[in-house]
Amino acid sequence: MPDRPLTMVLMGTGPFAVPAFDAIRRSADSIALVVTRPEVISKSRKPAPPSPVRQWATDNELPIYDPPSINDVDAVAKLQALQADLFVVCDYGQILSSHALEAAVMGGINLHGSLLPSYRGAAPVQWAVWNGDPESGVSVIHMTPRLDGGPVIASATTPIQATETAGELEHRLSQLGVQPTLDAIQTLRNWDRESTIGVPQDKSLVSKAPRLAKADGRIDWSKSLREIDCHVRAMQPWPDAFTLVETGAKQPLRLVIRQLVASEHPRPADAQPGQVIVADGRLIVAAGDGCVEILRLVPAGKREMAAAEFMRGNPLPADAIL
Image (cartoon, rainbow, N blue to C red):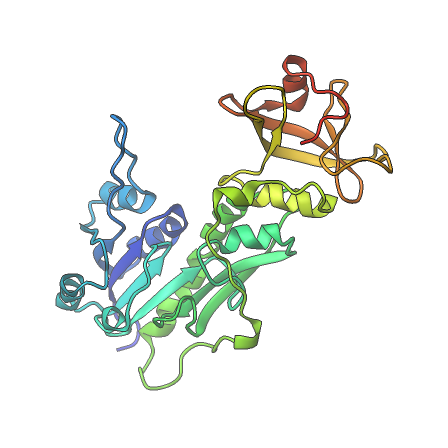
């Protein structure tokens, strides 16, 4: 029956899912269960904080289920027993098998932080910023067992701002994803389950967005000013863009770079990429096609500070190599 309330199971872990999930909570539809990843066991005395979705579900007194694998026999049986109409998945961290998806009458939808088929994978926002894309967006797909491969039911687009970090863009996209998620649910609510739903993804346009590693943060100073700026913004809030400075100590000093800008200072013809050009209270470094000025950084084990403050306590010679 058109516009009837649906019974849903929500599956998510990270912060990207919370705005869309909360919009569903405030709708006429019902939430039978919130599925999230198991809690992280902390090695320290202080317990690890709960994931954003777990915290949200707890605050709203919603039932939580956190199996190690959603595709285990017991987990699929639990989903089947709920007889849910739809699974809504976002930022969960597990890929549902065909058996798991079949446990809901309408299968599942997934809110993804890119304009699919671009950037399938775990880090779509970071890769869009790193590659210097002019725009990004969100897609809601009807799920298949293939990673981010289902037909697109709804989407929305937004420009990437010139100084925006991946973390800032991801926050905006999480808000942007609310309406497309609700639109996709409405489409499925009126679906006869026989006609084609959504727009198939063009396989020729598929690109990947694999999960980042700490080593991805290492700055390559031979890149262009534009590429270095995109890299620094893409690595925030994790894994952080960094460079290493030889200071005469046993280990080089690790500097996390939080903000830099193109510098008008001329690049000497014989300068090596990463070479400090000016060190008189400013920190100007040679790049592939000019110079950049580092504005804010985090020395290993210290707080974030202005580069000028760092230079007062840690003067670098004008020929140091980062």
